[in-house]
Length: 183
Image (cartoon, rainbow, N blue to C red; front, side, top):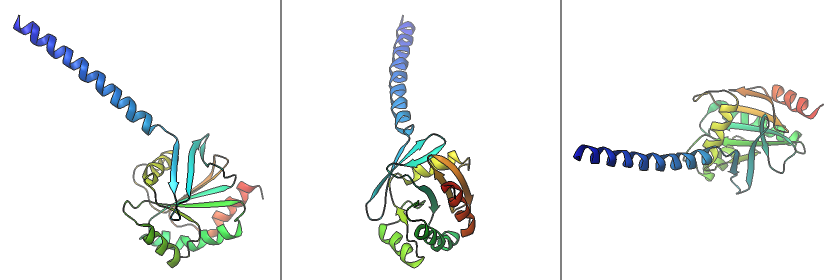
């Protein structure tokens, strides 16, 4: 009798905990599955980035988008900053460059110092969403969990135009911008 009661109790408890864990897992999956990322720039401008179609779009922007995944301490990232700025200036009506830092604890002051030192005259974001977005981008580009920086991904209308790992010459980026613009 005692064995039957014990087994019945254990069975009831397992159903109880199983049911709770399914609800918690479902809630966690729904949070993870969202395809929207709110990236906040150093001047507190928010950009809503959405996974759409074959890639990513920035809500309210009908431009070529370059996502630059970087770190302030990375020499190739530092070298790329002035080239990205030159392209942002040249194609300012048709191009939006968003620099997304991989650093967890970087301050806006540190990003602004990077901006001034390396002439990074484009949008830099420092947001709690950075890592979630970077993970989604890396998955989309099939980069794996560990990849070199900088990573530059170029999108137009939610379609991937091209992407690059590591330092890249300005001319290659410009060629891809022109291709995306149909020029």
